[in-house]
Length: 191
Ligand SMILES: [Fe+2]
Ligand SMILES: [Fe+2]
Image 1 (cartoon, rainbow, N blue to C red):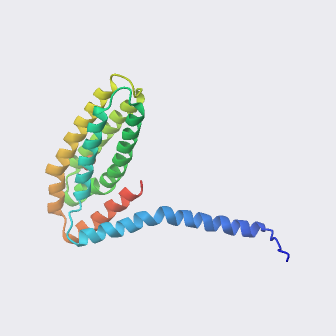
Image 2 (cartoon, rainbow, N blue to C red):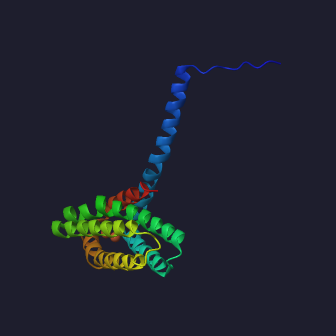
Image 3 (cartoon, rainbow, N blue to C red):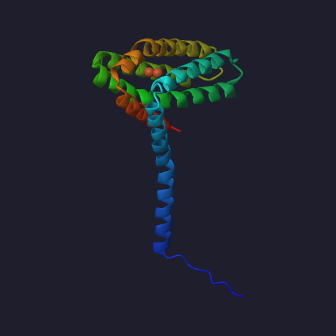
């Protein structure tokens, strides 16, 4: 029995490339959309739209505690923990900067509070940069972790005790649902 091998034409290859690109696009776009639907459903069920952000705060402080406990010789662990922190902070910041803080401006009407929170995020990024710029075995590494923890803890407290409650009070059920979905979608963009 003989098998005929088929040469792929340029058109076939182009179609395959388009198919592969479409699959890749779907793989990257679908998770945020699915997550948005889940977030919206959570909001529709009366869930707190800011619960996930509050849980993130606790997680960041735990990671920073773990970083602080590392020895100067544990450079690989320091790198791992720092990357986990950065990834989590990036997803968290997207949800806040693209959804929660604009809502603070538009739904609560407090532009100053919103700008203040954006400014604190910028400050955190500077501290993160400083932390990344020194070698992981440097004696000052732990001090920089402590400084970063202080600013994150104070910023998180402000959000949890002041700004999230004001947002909750300003949102009706439908808005809370929309925001919950939008914040879930933003977070999923970083996954
Ligand atoms: Fe924040
Ligand atoms: Fe936050």
